[in-house]
Length: 357
Image (cartoon, rainbow, N blue to C red; front, side, top):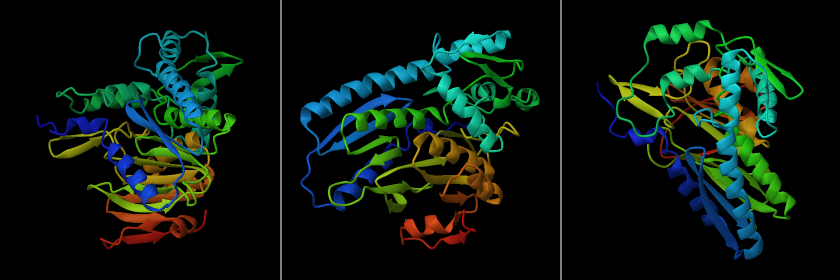
């Protein structure tokens, strides 16, 4: 058995993008605006919060509040933590009983049902058993290997999806015992949205919340837009950059985020719910949307959709800006994204421009 010696990349490779983001923003502004930064570890990644044009007291109060909130979100929404709100819901589903879902997690489940429907099932948080089978949430073990094909087929045959989740007020149940919820492709974006709403309620108008390279911005960086680097999926550095609008989110799903090598093949964490295996036709997808939760879910769904079907899924999910890099390293974009994206000119790319979204 051969395990990638860089196994830590299962959880932390996109931290490099943090530097790309802030090197870019620093280089594009001559502003002397006061800047405050704070870093939190939650959702398996570093979350860096940057605030501009506010007082030190207000910044520190916001940092304290958000650190507490991010830890609370993680504790409530984790399917792996014994006693978490989500794990108790999963236990109830497995037992075939109803449970009153806490308000901390119920809105995520409701929103996930809508996103599942809009993505034609490609965003499917009901496949928690499959996600657990692949063990991509394990941090530093050295014995990870692909599951047995028979086990994968058995879980896929149970056909778990979000339409199996029934909600009556606060009561949640499912008649499919194969359903287990794992909100990892949505929870981080949803948490960023809640955090940004809080900052805006405190009168903070210029900020970035960057969770391992997935981020939402409001306002500007001094007199210029926030400039965001998009990580190259196969080497150090960025493949492209863009200037943000005053309130929007940029999320990327890639096969380099959490992965291991086994017998010379890359196994990553983005599963195709139809097959139970890692999706194979994409290596990176970047989307822009105002809502970080939608951007988070859409990046996953479009990655699974691949170069043949991303356009129809993006349209169904109301995503207006997409860049997809396929397994042959062709770059697919819609015209609106082409106008905004700036590819680094160190390489020659095969670029495919779609019809407008």
